[in-house]
Length: 300
Image (cartoon, rainbow, N blue to C red; front, side, top):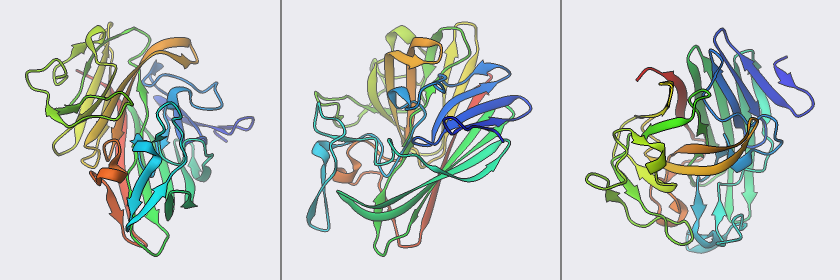
């Protein structure tokens, strides 16, 4: 069986690619193609450091002051970012998913959301990882098991890595951005054209903003991180993922020791979507909504 009984770590293997997935937050903890790392490896840690590889649902990023309103009633979520009083990264970041299906090169993990404080809905969240010869495909399926419409959004938190050489440049397929405020909630969107935040052409690592929300107007997207030796990794996302959180951790606790690491987080809604309504998908009772993204060893 492709798993580690000691920690429940699930190991997937194909002819040219391998991956390790933890049940904790259904997190992708390693991905290698032809021996090259495509995400920062964090398989040794029980909890994903810096949310590495975690699946974020039923919202990504933050809910301001951990409060929002549904049908005229204020909803109070658990505060998970005490420094600023926000609810961050959804409801499943500290949960262990269960294995629903397992093959040598694919796994589906599932978790239930059932009337949590501040989120009075019943959802089933199923995450499938499937190896490809040059990387991995991921799909998140959210099903409304309740009897009323439920607002939902999702995201993922991979730290990209292009092999062993230091990162050289990042290109983001996004035409708008939002600057973070004092409590990390972003301001209004602006066009990146003509600004120092335009990453539509590769930008050197040293010039990257360290925390910014990006947006693509429409359609699927492809983003590239290139290393000094020319190795490149591609994050691809379907048209549901219009928003991307760029975050640079100066010392992520990887299996190789602390490293400067770049998270490019595909999201189906921007920060604070439960309050603004922007990007939310309202699931009818019995409806299943599936979104997809993936990581590839790229030729640029």
